Length: 446
Image (cartoon, rainbow, N blue to C red; front, top):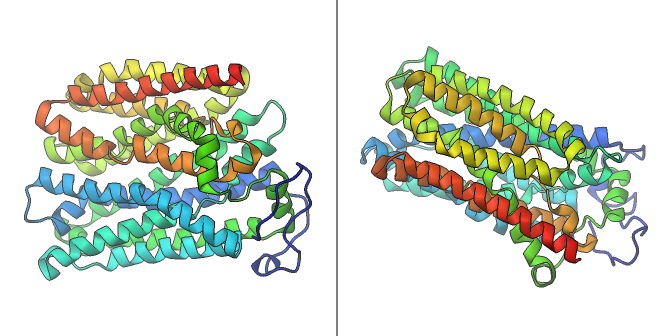
């Protein structure tokens, strides 16, 4: 997409109907919020499936394949370090691919980013083990994980923000949660694939070749998601919607000088949701693998049931937010997450019943909160900065809230006790409440 001058809110489309890749699939019909919602759900479901395939493999596979020289706990912690690399790389990917978008087009940006994501995913599936090539296997895994993070940043297409801005009056909370449904959907599919493989393969077969299969499936789903998104973003009507809402890349230096506070507040607003995100998905799976005797595949089934509850919670969050407001919804859920954090040690250490309760209640709270966590402060950005600001806010929220959550939670709980997991989650909830309060004061002042 070519650069443009941001003058008035009703500026004409900047992209010619005959320009480049956009004309490949050009359609001029009206794009409704429902069309955007489908693009968001399909595209992000592919991303989340890929995300959870890697996350689950970090617990069940990578400690044995890439860190056999360490004990099981250390190997899992090493795997979680590499897991975090993608979140560190993600904002750099956002900046790099914003430049690609300004230089060429949004179509080209998405094509390159998702091709890069798919390539990294397939190559991970083909990696030799540490026993075959030594430390080079770890280096290659780390580089490919960084590549996934760069691609994740590059896959930002503005669809979630555009969906919220295009929502009918009084329905913004409902439309804002639609893209969030992709997370539990992606988890259910990824966990289901791993549960099936573990339950039907010997451990030797699973660690030799079985674990590679989900990565190939992720690549195939990635291709489907790519075409679903390109079909939408390659239309002249989509270009008009982006231009009307000033959803185009802005200079980062200017953004940070003028709207840097909004990025920080936005990231902190989502902190409780994003911390809980990994504390009910990745962390408990690692704890069960290390310190419990129950079959991993049965625990994955419980998590899948929890993800269904999360999906229902996300749906409910849209209705609730439209009734009482997104800030009230997020604040109430942050307080409930803080209360839930107190019971984390007793539930995780409470046998099968306690662990199941932790998963089911935790996923429910996650759905209710996560449904409104994305873009809660997007409207704070000036129109010229909204596209880039929303992307960097999301990157920072994932980096601060989720990147190191499995590593910190497992490391602290294994060495000092599960009480430290409570403190970690509680601190995230307090940060969310503080950010919501500060955001309220800024809005009143403005």
